Image (cartoon, rainbow, N blue to C red; front, top):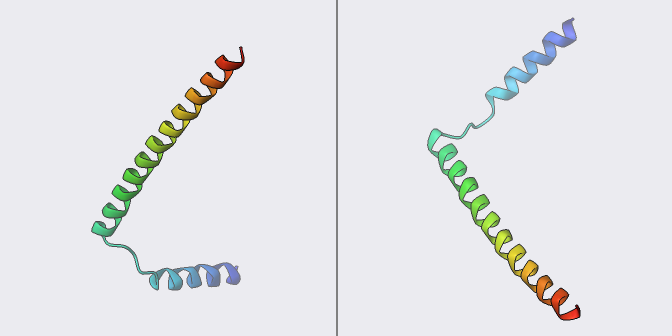
Length: 63
């Protein structure tokens, strides 16, 4: 039981050393994640559409 108390005491001490982000930093980072995720999704949608069109052309030529 003493080891468990010691463990949680150490966890609490180490948690106090953590530099937590401010509300503004968290908001800016979250917005950047949403924006970059949206940009990447649109990019992959475009690439997928182009490749699908190319495949349709290739398949129609061979038929």
